[in-house]
Image 1 (tube, helix red, strand yellow):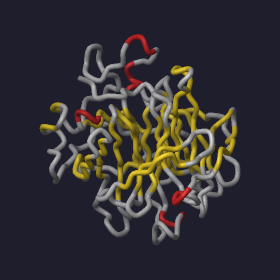
Image 2: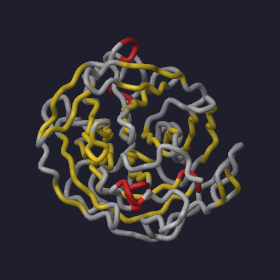
Image 3: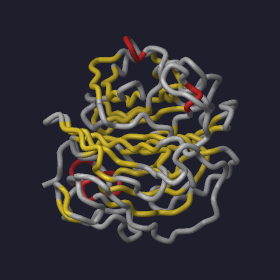
Image 4: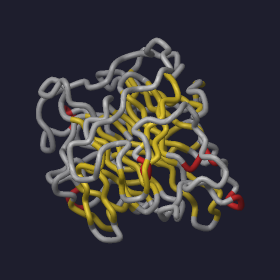
Length: 328
């Protein structure tokens, strides 16, 4: 759930760009315009694989009781924790219902900083952890943001040298499903420095990524069954399961057709992975984010799941309360 800057990886990307705005935008909680779709999955608000929904919903973060996708009552999670959340380059927080192709604007983040938003993860209490960073990666910080009203407070974490710009994702503990850890991927400079975890107020390095992913950076997402995955912007882009104890790559999957992006993020929900990608804004100033879906159960890749949604996503987060299978 992070915006990638092309200058990080000479071997993976070219040119230099800053695809996010610095600071906090003026508050505006009006609904965004509907998202377009130019391809096979059907437009936002049209018929999709799992039901019908509008491109942008009413301003309510919760899934109602009995609504498809609501969390079972015995898992200790509030309904709001089952949603995906995304962050725009304009510092706006949205909830996302992948099964409905529905983004709902929550508000503008109230974090008091001149840094730019970069990455996001969401914990089991539906609190978003947002990484802000200076454009030159000289400094970074973490804020905790309410997914109910986008209010913000400092996390108290200190990001040491090399860990200012992060990929982020929570992953649960298999022995204690209600426990989770915040994993990060260091993305400051070239090469990347691998996997770490937030412990207390600082980053503890875990280890370098292995194989062809060594020295690269990743965006991260975790799952409620204890796994951790990375989105690597190689050619083609790849999804890889990561060993949380060592940083080694367990298994990698090529995702042909998904663009190698400038602004990018991803999340897991309902057994599928969703990739949020946008090109260099200088080369394609009018193009906003596309959403692609990868379904491991049948190996399908839908690069037109949602296209040109109307804003550029720079971060995405989903808690370990999110469903492991598609709600019925």
